[in-house]
Length: 271
Image (cartoon, rainbow, N blue to C red; front, side):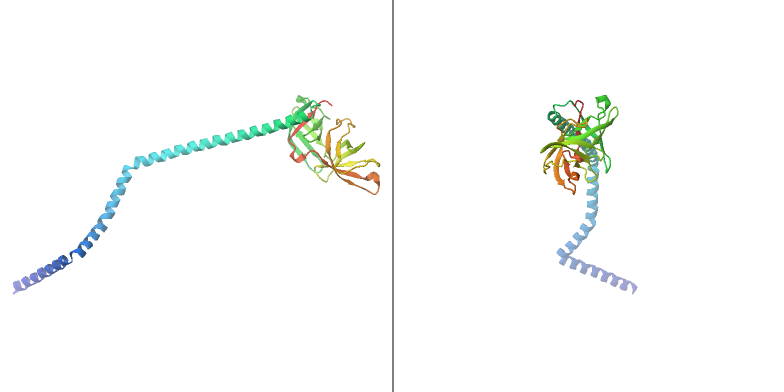
């Protein structure tokens, strides 16, 4: 009895297996795709991993070689950049020196009648009360106090103190400065003094009552006073300010020299 039941169960199992196989083979295309997809999903990650590992191992030496080459090229580029920057600075210095030399040449040609020493401004003190500059020549170069200093456009001032290698110059726009001048429309002298109003203006004072001062008149040194030689350009009359008393009238004069841009000057050592 028991054996019969056992044989019946086995028969049922075999029957089920046969039916499953029949179903599988009867739908072979669909099940084949299922098994292929399953195999692909299982195998592909492993294959990709092995491929990556192979590529990594085979290209490892090239990778580090490329890194080293890039480092060397980067260092060469940095060095080249530094060299180019240095060359640019040198060219800028040469350009500045050439411009300075050209300014000296122009000044020397313009004031060829004087024996001069070229120099450049190394310090400026252009405040409300003191308007002085320091130049890079001194007693070792033959510079002395009261020597006249000129720029490309005209009168700058005169030396008030010297050291071995420098000289301090009181500019004509200093409030303590007085320059004896003449105007192009008259031979009579006026006195030009520095003001507190503007850095590049003078006040022409002590104008003779019968002098006809005109806007645009050229003002030059008169040669009086014992410091400045005659005929050095000082500036241009901007306006004439009349007063109730004619003796108090004065002229506002724009200096020929732009003191804000003053870099190179000449010291006249023979007058």
